[in-house]
Image 1: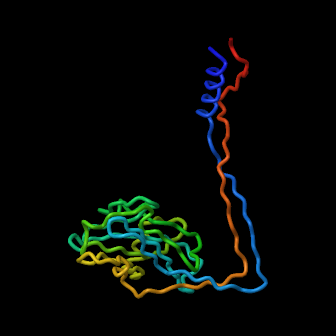
Image 2: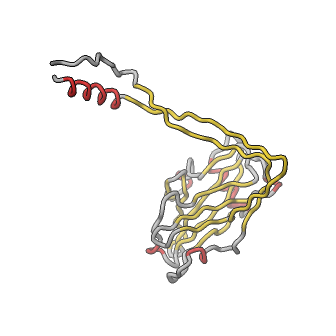
Image 3: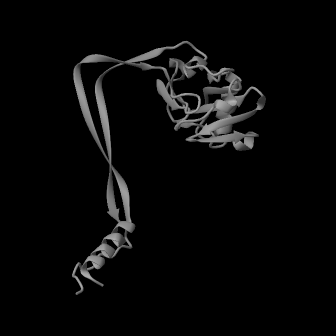
Amino acid sequence: MNGITRRAWLMAACCASATYSLAQATEVTESSEITEYCIPQTSVRGGYEDLMIDHNMIIPPSDHFKRADVFIAARLKSDPNALWLLSGITWKSIDSAADLPRAQYKSYAQLPLVVPVSVFNSPFDVTGMMGDVELWTGYGFRSESESTVESFNEMVAASRFEILWEAPSQLSPFPELGLRGPYSQICMETSVVKKTILTAEPTVGTGATVGSSATDN
C-alpha cells in the first residue's frame, strides 16, 4: 500500500466512524429601553403548489400556564368525517380514538402567551384540493396523568378551535386570501434579546482506531 493510499484509507475510516453533537451558546443583548417588535400573526408563503403557512396562536390570560396539547388539523369538505392531525412534522390519519395518542402538534406543561405553529414544515401542493381542504388550529387541556385523547376531547367539547385557512374553489394569485380571519399583526415589547447559536461538533466514534501515518514504499 503506497503512502497516499494508506493516508486516504485512515482518513476515510475516521470519518466513517465519526458522529456529531450539537454545542449551544447563548448571546444576550440588553437595552435600557423597551423595544416593540411586530410580526404578521399568520404568514402565507409560496403558491398553491408549494404552500407554507406559519401562524402565531395568541392564548387568552385565563389559559396561561396550563398543561395543554396544541393541535393542527386538516379536513376535507367532501369527506367531513375524515380527519388528519399534524404530529410534529408528520400528518396522521385519525380514524378512531385509538389514533389520537401522540397525535398532537406540540405539548406544553405551561401554555405560553404566544404559540408559534408551522402548518407545513416544507412546501406542500394543495392544487388537487382546491375548494375542499380546511386547516384548523386549537388546543385542549389535560392533567399530567391523562393522554392526548382527553385533551383532544376537551378541546372539542369547549369549541376551542378555529379554521385558519381554506383553499378557495378557484386558483387566485394570492393564497393568503384563503385565511379565514382578517390580516393582523402582533407586537411584543422587550428589552432583552437572546440569540442561541447551535454548532455541530464532530465526535470520533468509540470503535474508531487511529493508526500510524507512516508510509509504505
